Length: 282
Image (cartoon, rainbow, N blue to C red; front, top):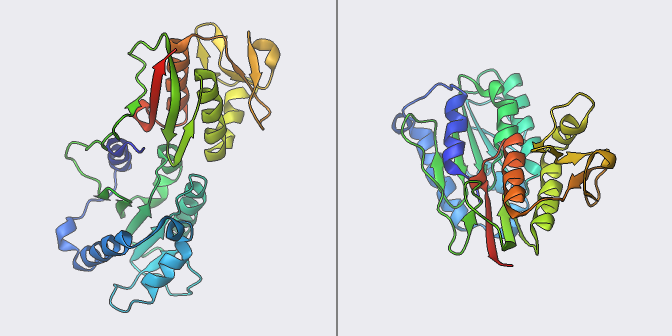
C-alpha cells in the first residue's frame, strides 16, 4: 500500500520546475512505451530491473537517455530513467545512485522514477539533488504522477483492508494481518504487528533507530512510556525486538498500540494510510 497523495505532496514540496507534460514529445512517447512494457512484466521481472533497463536501451525507437541500473557507458543525456525493483531496501540505494548521476551529469533535465515502492523519508533525504529538473514517477499498477498544483489523488484501499486510524477505537480487537510497502504479513496480536513493523522500518532506514535511542535523542513516547530503547531498564514491560539490539514497550492496550504505531510511522516519514490491517474481535 502506498499513499499516492503523499507522493504527490513529496514532489510538490521539492519545489521542482514544472514543464507542461504535453509539450514533451519524446518523454510522452517514452511514458507510453513504459506502460506497454509494464503490462507484460512478471513478478520475476521486477526482481531484476537491470534486464528491464537493457531491454529499453536496445530499442532504437526510444529517445536518448541514461538508464539506472545499467552497465552502459553512454554519454550524459537530458533524460534519466531509474528502474527500482520490488524490494523496499532497494529504494534508498537506487535513489542515491540517481542523485549521484545528476550531480555528475549537469545536463540532466528530466528524471523518470519507475517503481513499485515509495519511501517519503528517503525521497526527502535526496530530493535536493533533483531541484530544477522535471520529475515523473511511474508507480507500477497505478500510473504516472507529476508535480502538480491540483489536489492529490488517493490510492484505493483493497477490499477487506483498512488503514490504521488513531482517531478510532480498537479495544477488544486484534489484527490478523497487515500490509506495508511490499510486505504482507499475518499477525496474531498488536504486539506482533509492532514488532514486525520495527523490523521492516529498520531495513528501510536503520540510522533512524540510532537517532531514536542515542544519548540525548528525542525518544518516541506514549504518555510516560518510552516506545523503543537499547536499554530495557527504562521500559516498563520490555520485549527484545527480533534480530535487533533494541527493546520495545509492550505494556499497552489496543488503542495505545495503534497510536504508537501511528507515531512510529510519522517519525519514519510515513502516514497512517501507508499501513493497512485486517482485524477481528478478541
